[in-house]
Amino acid sequence: MTFPKLTPTERIADPRCGWKPDADSPAHGAPATWHIAWHLVYPADFSLVCDEHMAVIQRDMVYADRHPAELACDMPGTGWLTTDPSRCVMATTDDRQAHRQADAS
Image (cartoon, rainbow, N blue to C red; front, side, top):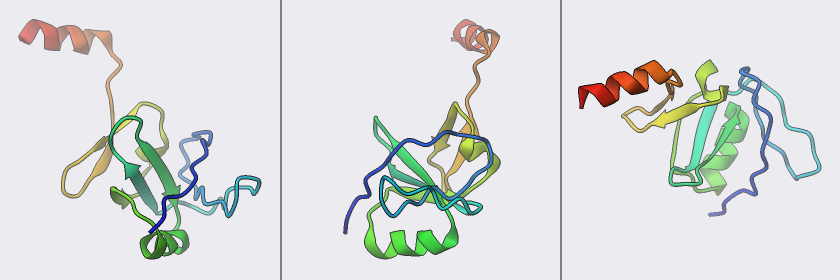
């Protein structure tokens, strides 16, 4: 089993397959159907891929978790919720929410 060489991609809130045969190639760009967590400990790495490339990954690579790709998966500030099944969730950036939680403790 191998781990892929990961390269950062711009997030555009339109989940697209980021599979690249090599660093100099453009991303595949088909609609992403899977969101992969390569590892979930800091610094975590994630990828969005289509069904075709998920089959290659399942056959040849090691990953920590996966779930069906959704719009939230490609948004900045999302978190990976490790439930069964896993999913992406939007984290709050509202300072009032942080204060409410601090006041409640």
